[in-house]
Image (cartoon, rainbow, N blue to C red; front, side):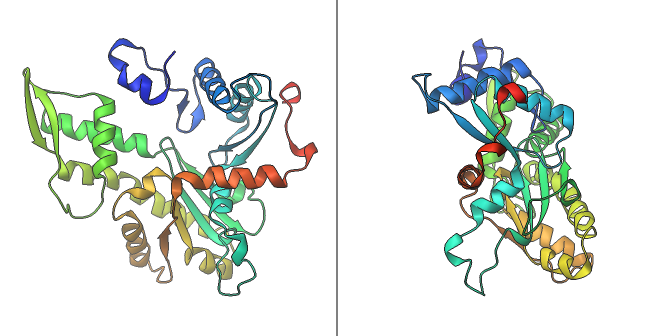
Length: 299
């Protein structure tokens, strides 16, 4: 069995499986296999106990949580499932600055917008563990941008031969919203001949797919708070996840909110987004009491 980049490199000869869809377990056997592979990287001797803190999309419902517990319970000795935006906020938090009155604690009065591959998760944080009412999950994210970009390319170049992996890579290397700042070409095969075709505008169109729903969800989530709290949260919207790296997306979201009359809205990018959730998970693991961890036999 091949995993990750190795599987993608050998894709011509493999039947690729995607354990997750929209951030949720959809292929349970594949999810068990992949998590088993991850465990083997942590404890290759197979004898050590391994406990895991795992992020889930915001407001995951009971059947989807049960699937995740099943996949985790097959591989880990104990585990915790925590909303991913909350883990991101903990990862952003700098404990050394908590006593600084000028420091804005991301766990208090902020909104995390985590743009992933399968889902975009929004979470109000007010200094305590978020409830379902504090979270919104948009089942549209990076994978949907890939699909939209492929559709746009096929519409413009109907004879081109495309592979999903190639579309994802050109998007990840050149993603932006707003006016194109450079010419982007993609090597495609048309009628058996290689050609370099211009796809700049198509990338921009595809990447804007998420902006309206994010803006609408930010507004809806803010309305669930008292006005004073909502004003503080809207002034501290933090983007994270792979989709946060789309050039121009913080500015576009902020401008759209201003156009809707939210003049105090401020949207910023979290630094080092790839490490935030894992850093937050480590903090949770250190804070959790023994009785808070789930046992596979009891999950």
